[in-house]
Image 1 (tube, rainbow, N blue to C red):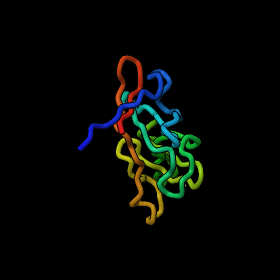
Image 2: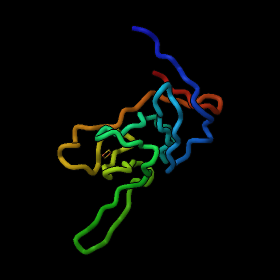
Image 3: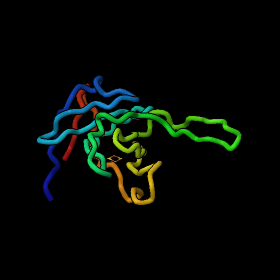
Image 4: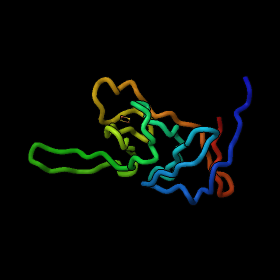
Length: 124
Ligand code: FES
């Protein structure tokens, strides 16, 4: 088994909660974001549904409604909504949170990522 290769992809300050930061990664694009708890996420830039560029999606939370019309948001900054069909994925687990049954086997592809001396390091 070979050791993972590490790539310095950007400054840590470029990756913010609630934002999507695209960075080139070979011939592909990685999308970086930061969860409200401070941990980083590095994910493949294409949606697992039909390949939309996730850098054009948005980071949101869960919107939950009650029968009386009350709507509440929870987990702000922990959900990624795809720009094409609106499927939503949990940025903590990669699992879909709002998607039709056919999409429930899809998940975001994460890369190992760390923050070292103010830089974002992705391993592959
Ligand atoms: S391509 Fe992302 S939800 Fe369809």
